[in-house]
Image 1: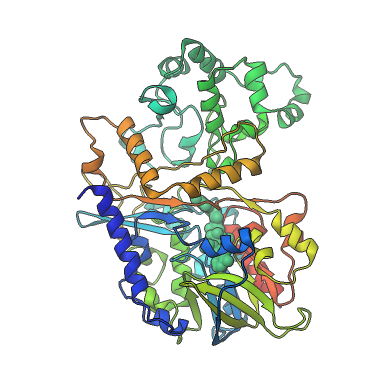
Image 2: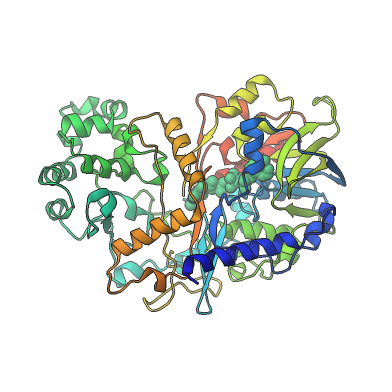
Amino acid sequence: MGKITRRDFINGTLMAAGATMLPIGCTSDAVLDALNPLYYPPSLTGLRGSHPGSNTHSHARAWSNKSDWGATTELKETYDLVVVGGGISGLAAAYFYQQKHGKDKKVLILDNHDDFGGHAKRNEHTVDGQLRIGYGGSQTIVEPKHGSKNVHALLKDIGVDIERFNTAYDKDFYKRNNLGAVTYFNKEKFGEDKVVKHPYCNYPNYVEGIVMGGKLSNEEAAQQAPLSEKGKEQLLRVLNGGLHKLNIPEHKLEDYINSNSYFDYLEKTLGVDDPGVLRMARNSGLDWALTGTDLMTIGTAKNVGALGFVPKKVYDEENPYIYHFPDGNAGIARALVKKMIPSVAKGKNAEELVMSVFKYAELDKSSNTLRIRLSSTVVDVKHSGDPKNSEEVLVNYIKENKSYQVKGKNVVMACYNMMIPHIVSGLPEEQAAALSLQSKCHLMDFPVSIGGYEYTKTPDDPCIIQMISCPYGDTMGAPALEQYREARYKMLGLQFKDYENEIRVHLSGMLPKELFDFDKDVESITVNRWAHGYTVGGPGDSVLVGRQPFGRITIANCDSAPAADAKAAIDMALRAVNELG
Ligand SMILES: Cc1cc2nc3c(=O)[nH]c(=O)nc-3n(C[C@H](O)[C@H](O)[C@H](O)COP(=O)(O)OP(=O)(O)OC[C@H]3O[C@@H](n4cnc5c(N)ncnc54)[C@H](O)[C@@H]3O)c2cc1C
């Protein structure tokens, strides 16, 4: 049996084990109480992130306005608070609510995924008996020292010690092992597989401790790039370029670079027309820039360290890029869950939880004051009467293709904000319109040893290779929202085998053939596919208009900040809880 089949088989079996355990016609109380104790989504491989099936009901609601979900089972469950969305914001909302109103308050969190954490998910791989932990989306606590006092208080209370990363993260690892940044050109796009010891853009800034610049001079880097002679000459022009090439007086420069396009600068000021150089330039903005550089001003391209601008440290001295748990910000999500459901895992603080195997069967126990119900997509949220004086909110969700209803005295919508108008009935028109304008772009190992977990130290030990892809639309220069949509549909249309094949081609192309054999050396693959990734927000004041409280319903999620940042997700949770009164 080939490797691909085995990987799919493992994935398929575990998923089925979770599903076949569920007795037909039981209420949800029984469902998760009876869940297979072996159910452990972090160890699932294959297509994860927005895993297959996770968005089916949301898409049916949003795309076809589906409202007939069959007979609804009205559960005898009433909560003080129902939270829609089990990402960091939803978990934090539950935490803040119980802090404010008492730990005896009953809270239910509903999430459409088969694991909690939203973008902050954990991946596990076991190779030759060794556990390797990775992150399935959100990787790091960004600039924690800039966090609000509420964020710091929450982190402290759930046992996250920010200072611990100063020693947990091995800052000298790259220097000690003489590891620097390189660029891989692939045969499909550049005619040959080639690795050049130069980053050409700012990506090393993601890896604290790695040598920022290339090992080659600009001349050597341009010469070694697999481009035509004309392309090499133009690439060198870009690498040696910069603001000094603009014939603009000093006092007008700032305005100029913030209102003129980077691609115009490449084409008109530097005379670049080589498709290979333009391709390199378009992809040099990296994921956190949200779009390709074809949509950037010169100023933005400079800030993100795009092709031709010196790679720079984005993170300040006080906030080095070291605040990663081995499972990224899943470390925060897990610590929040442990705080509210103590029986879920062993460990006194976030560090001790790193190696802890969570008991998912504890999440939705009827004896809990805080319950987390997974694989449950909320499709309708409505006040039982006039929103101004209604006493309760009815929350309908779909689980296993069956429709259920619970009641909440209050609801926090911590899900994607643009979904809210499709779910919450009776929203004022202006608010619904503003929420519809909110958008997200799509997204597809750090040397940290903590909590008994040791990162991979030698080439002989198994390691996780993290590969990141941020697809753009096919048409350079097309508006961002169009490009996001195009790339999102492209992503959702790909199957695991498509991703696996691309990974095979890339790794086989960049690693020496005599040292690497994909079928022998790759044990397992997890594709963390985020079709709805970084929050982008909406135009004008649409974020503020959209996040207004509506009767007993308030709105959290980092979309309501908007900022693709765990600190913002926490701050927004507190605001939403406080707005409930
Ligand atoms: C790939 C990636 C990398 C990132 N890296 C970082 C990083 O390093 N550091 C950082 O600070 N931030 C990072 N972010 C940003 C991240 O979005 C935020 O930090 C934060 O995790 C968002 O939390 P949230 O709870 O607001 O939203 P989410 O994590 O999106 O959680 C919302 C949850 O609601 C669920 N939901 C949606 N609709 C429904 C419904 N109808 N019913 C039930 N549930 C629903 C969603 O599926 C999701 O699980 C990253 C994001 C992505 C996608």
